[in-house]
Image 1 (cartoon, helix red, strand yellow):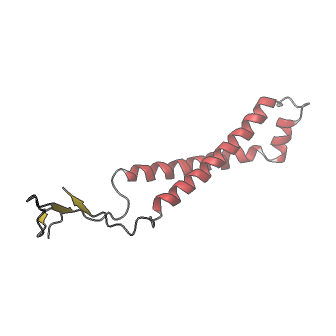
Image 2 (cartoon, helix red, strand yellow):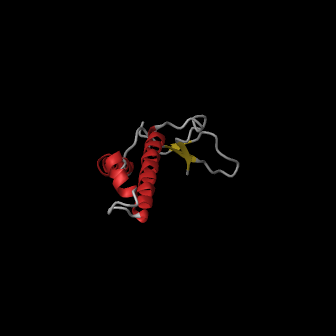
Image 3 (cartoon, one colour):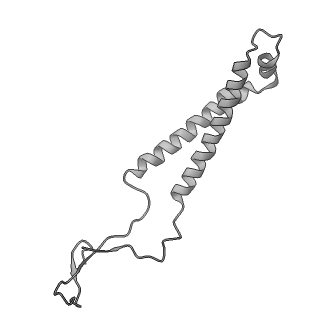
Length: 122
């Protein structure tokens, strides 16, 4: 049976109107425009992790960190210290948020399992 064909109900209403139903096919997996959402989430997760590992985390090594934070060194700049800390914290928050978003994207909904939304009245 074609799910897009209309089916007539044998029980006619008192006004003589016979409702018709369309059975929508069930949705399986993630597809369509959600593919772009998945790609962008993975791309942002990989790129932010790359920036954290190659650029930001090496700044916190003792030699570099002492060079930046020591007031007698020529590389000292208070604004730079605050910027590095802020950027590291924000990037870690972005990584956590992307992981949570990917987890929620692939998790199946359990709250709507009691409702059969494949039947639609026209």
